[in-house]
Image 1 (tube, rainbow, N blue to C red):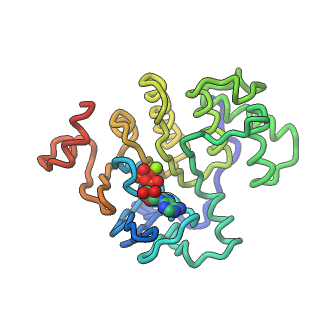
Image 2: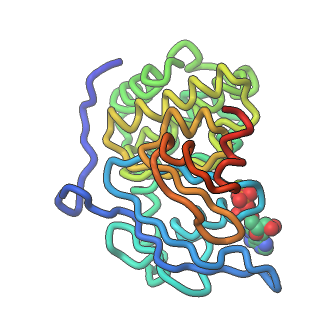
Length: 261
Ligand SMILES: Nc1ncnc2c1ncn2[C@@H]1O[C@H](COP(=O)(O)OP(=O)(O)O)[C@@H](O)[C@H]1O
Ligand SMILES: [Mg+2]
């Protein structure tokens, strides 16, 4: 891995325990379906929080509320202290340069090579035009995820794990201060899942990123989490370190751990 030549501009001073995402009593319904009933979550700077929950519990809806793709019916979501639901289009765009998200698919452009996929956010978001600078940053980012050899390949030539790495490199290349991972290991074999989980951890350490990682992969939670919250039926039912929750007597909490551990 090479040295980083740029640093993320910070608008606000870094303080210990600074809350970068503050979800305060949000609820969200779709028609008659109450998906989120009362969700509270604080993400501190530099922390990896894992959200565990069965499917259809509103985990992805929560993530979409953080970046303003959905608006909660009640409650507030603050990112770096600013209420997302009060942001205008310009402010939302600015927010999304600081908050990177990695969706399940990896979301690479199929017709573009890996190099072009990574150049895209650099030209579009950071407005970098110097080709030498673009090359340098793309190579650095790919080197960071062990994919330098695949730079001229198309996504269709990559394995699922490699696509995920490329997607991660593309999201991280603009150095977001916050990362949202939606089921980052789903659909991958156990060894590749472990590699992706370790990569998420190394990204956190290297860039001091604060992350919310949504998963039902207990191995991923174990590797990446500083703190775990468990979501069920629209509320958070438990919170603690992985080992604390593993020892819980609560039946529902136990059910998550009993599957694989
Ligand atoms: N934009 C939407 N419109 C209507 N219903 C939605 C929308 N997004 C999610 N839902 C519903 O909300 C529930 C929770 O979805 P989701 O957050 O995707 O669950 P998960 O915890 O698996 O990520 C599901 O029943 C889903 O159908
Ligand atoms: Mg989901």
